[in-house]
Structure formats: C-alpha cells, structure tokens
Image (tube, rainbow, N blue to C red; front, side):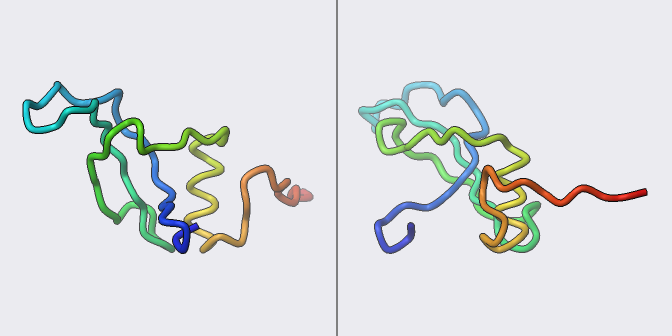
Length: 81
C-alpha cells in the first residue's frame, strides 16, 4: 500500500471544526506503529483523501500488531480447553 501512497490508519473522530486555512473537512487519523499499536502518529487529513475500509477495530489492530501477517477477515485458530 505504501508504494501507492496509501497508509493504513484508524479514524479517531468525526472531524474537526472548519479551519479558514483548510478548504476541506479534516478528520483525525491515528497511524499505529507495529508491533506496539499504542504508539504511533496522529495526523489530520482532508476527508476526501481517505478511504473507508470495511474492517473492525479489532481486525485493524491485529493487522498492525502482527506486522501485516494476520489480514482482516482471517479466521483465528480456536483454543481448545
């Protein structure tokens, strides 16, 4: 994705108040670091420059923590008691 200029992130708010310097609506996005998703970067980008993915927060964090090994939609092995 990064070779296409696409960086996976998690939208953390509905958007900011309109700013006179920003002609478009901005959204705040958290870009987690791997393998520790509690660290990362927070950026604001125009909503029109974002792509909404059909994944849950759990799937997104599993993808980040695993370094991209566990892809969204992958069934996790069940634990046997």
